[in-house]
Length: 221
Image (tube, rainbow, N blue to C red; front, side, top):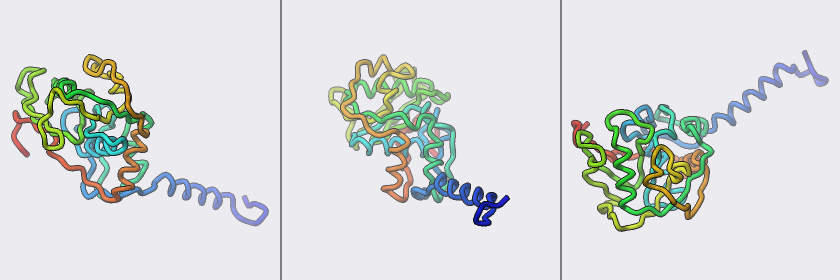
């Protein structure tokens, strides 16, 4: 069937679909290594680290915490990274990032909760940014963290830190209410999906650094 100008409606429809596809697959940057979230509920993962980095950057925080339940077990191959791939890897891309002030003691308690099931999978496992943690999964729960460092310095129980996290985590999701009860956001940032897309757009080339969470009970490598 043809329109008044003799142009096939099938051709018009095909062009529209192509244009939609171009918009849907907008390339926002490049990954020098795969962005992997397949083990997000049991160990540090590169995609989780990237999202945590983006959250930290979006609100000017010192560190970031991201619960595993926010990510799908996705794998984004090395090479061009699209907006759709990044937001599609998030279960709740429209949830806001918030900046909260948290004591070192609260952060330590949150890490203990995060690692309490390790090496078994848990939706409450935390991906981190600006923070390194060594622990022993063979130790009793609540006694597993060996050391935590922020910006290279030991985590101080008495110090207050500026932490980026999803709004749901700040409200105490997944049992964290016992630790983060009463937290009041100092700043509400962008949606998590927007934060990670903008982060990759700004960087152009990304490769999340590993070595943030290390289990001393398991062989290195």
